[in-house]
Length: 144
Image (cartoon, rainbow, N blue to C red; front, top):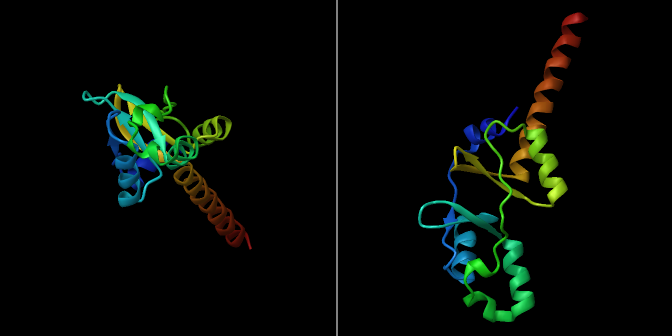
C-alpha cells in the first residue's frame, strides 16, 4: 500500500501558516484544529518549513514566554522532508523512524497534496495486517 491510500481515507486537508505569523498564532491553530504540526508556506504555496507542537515547547523552554511573539520562521524546521503519494507506507515509516519525525507533507508535482502522520501510517499498516490475517483465517477454515 502507498501514501495515496492513506490520503484517500483521511483526505488531503493540510493546515499551513506563513513564516511571519507568530508562535502564539501557530499554537492557537494547532489547538483549535487538534493537529500536531503545520506546514510553513510562502505566499505562492511553496513549502518553507514545518513547525510542530514540540517546536513550540522547545522555543518556550529556550526563550521563555517571549517565544510566543517570535515569528514562526525562527523555530521552523527547514528543509522539510517530504514524500510522494506513490511512496509505500513501509518506506515512509522507515523515513519517519530514521529521521525521528512524526509528520510528512505529501508533495506531487511541486504541490502540497496532503500530510501523513506516523499515527496514520501505523494505523494503515495495522489495518493491512488485520486484512491479511482475516484472509489466512478464511483459508484455514475453508480447508477444514
